[in-house]
Length: 174
Image 1 (cartoon, rainbow, N blue to C red):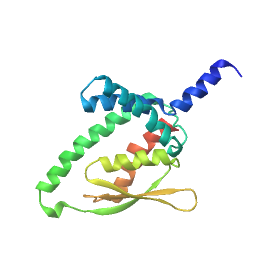
Image 2 (image 1 turned 180 degrees about the horizontal axis):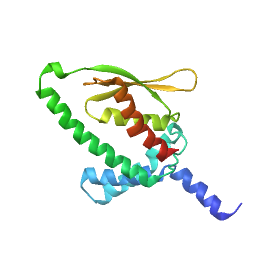
Image 3 (image 1 turned 60 degrees about the vertical axis):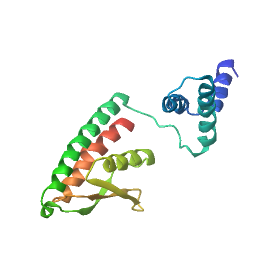
Image 4 (image 1 turned 120 degrees about the horizontal axis):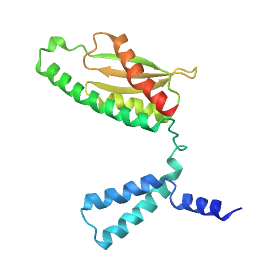
C-alpha cells in the first residue's frame, strides 16, 4: 500500500464530504459575522463533526457528466421562477375564473433518487406548481404527481416538465 492511498483514506475518514465541510465552515462564520478565534474554532469543529456523523445517511457520491450544463440549468430555473412569479401574481390578481387547478401525473424517465429529488424540487420551486408525490409503478418506472394552479392542458404540463427539466437533468447526471 502506498503512502498516497493511505493519506487519501485517512482524509476521507475525517472529511467524508469536503465540500459540505467547507460550506459549513463558511456559513457558520458568515451567519455569525465574526472572525473571532472562538468562532473560527467552532466553525472548524462543526465542519469536521457534522459531516462525519451524517456520512452514513448520505447516498453514494453523485457523478456529474456535464458540470457546465448544471450552471445553465440553474440559470434556466432562475428564469422560470421569475417568470412564474409574474404569471402567478397576474393569475391571483385577475378573475378567479382563470384558475384551473389540477393534479397531473407526469411519467418519468429518471430512475436515480437524487436526480428525481432535484426534479421534484425544481417543480416545487417554480411558483404555481408543487410536487406532491413520487410513485413507483412497480415496473421500474416512476410518476411524479404535480399540482398546478392553472393547467388548461395537462399534456402541455407533462411535456414541459419532461422536456424542459427532466431531459436536461438526464444530460447533466447521465
